[in-house]
Image 1 (tube, helix red, strand yellow):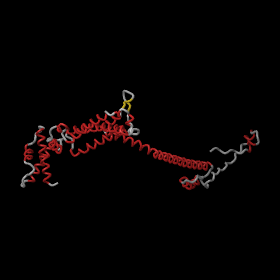
Image 2: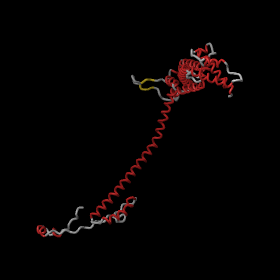
Image 3: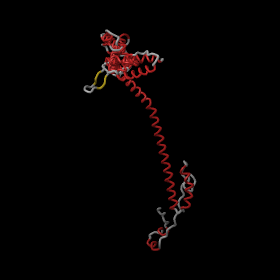
Length: 350
């Protein structure tokens, strides 16, 4: 796009915004009207200055008509040339198209509702019904969804046109929403088995298939959330078995770790008991200090516990027996049995 076309488009938008502001009773600066009245073909002399003035006037007029955008104001100017019955249907071509779609959907809804095939609920079951009765019911659901989708689209378009937030470049998105609403209404009324829900006052509130089609067409996002919830539930079921296996493995690893720690505590306890036994048996601490250096690698290893100073797999050596105690003569004379004098002394309790 060259500079001349940009200047011409900017002059056209500035002229449209000036006319819209004057018709809406908005005060327009005199210098801006003077720049707009000069047109988009300035002379060769001072062409750069003219474009700069046009740019400033365009920016000033955009602030005056905000939140309406320049392209929306130009669209209003073009659509103002439409007169007669079409003008009564809407301010823009998109609004008139949605109005005709809504009227056609309502007429189709009324015409199909006269069919006797709608009286039998079994004809609406897509898994059991066949032929023309099923086709009539499906067309009826599509018409109901189209009524809801066109109603929602008309409501949104009219509100955005009134507030000035309508963007002409996004006109195709409204048709996409209409198709999505029709598909959502058909899915909600046929495939998704949602016919009733708990009520606050009564036991249940019945929702017929045509009502579900109308609701699905009006708000396709509701059906999208329902399908998303179903997908999330299916993923949770599929992931449940894998997560359960991981949980079992974690528990097994934790149990093995606890068993290993219990064995290590037992090894340390046995070593301390053996040291106490040797000290009680009269062994010198200097000898035990040397044996402690030999026992440290055994504690840190996974080998079976071996006593201090012994080979692995041998039982702890018995402590030396203390000397026998001979009673005094006076105590011996009081004893009644011969075994009292020569009786071996028991081991002291350490």
